[in-house]
Image: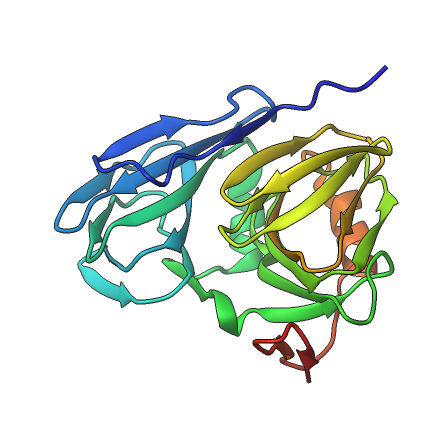
Length: 260
């Protein structure tokens, strides 16, 4: 029987300010949101017992938090101090994915160990790159926020051009969302059943399922993975083993050929 996998399409054609809750209840403690902020408008997110994990995937924005301003004209992620508000000002029409990740008992000790400085900012194109055993030599994998910055959370991306694939595998320790950049097109395999995924979609990878990706000739695969894990120690061991930094900064040219 084909598995019913939670997925949704984000409306980036909207011409009004809008905040939409996405796929609630899939991952305990994690709630995804889509923020559409039109040029000249702003949205303030107040502090709470959670992290605001923000990814601007379309448009140009200014973030204001803790008395400082940060302007970005490209894809970027920002995580403010959980005790501080953040205001997002749209320079052009902007779209952001937010993961609101609850702070659990024991997280304060982990946060102290990690010594993360807030706001945590990562310009996407400068993200550290890694290799893992499930992907081809052509694939570019990026770690945007690695596993020792925010307690029980990490996120990064996968980019390649078809024909290519990500081998099917399972990770029972990691609850996971995939989010596809606007240019993405691929088939996600969930327990070997294909789900065609185009741009601006959020998909929940069921915990413990076999999952992989198939990219056909002419397709551009480009998606974020977002990992959440209650078993911190064992998840860290797994991520340390499979995310091996390359020390390089590869990219794809306009013809989809890997450079570097």
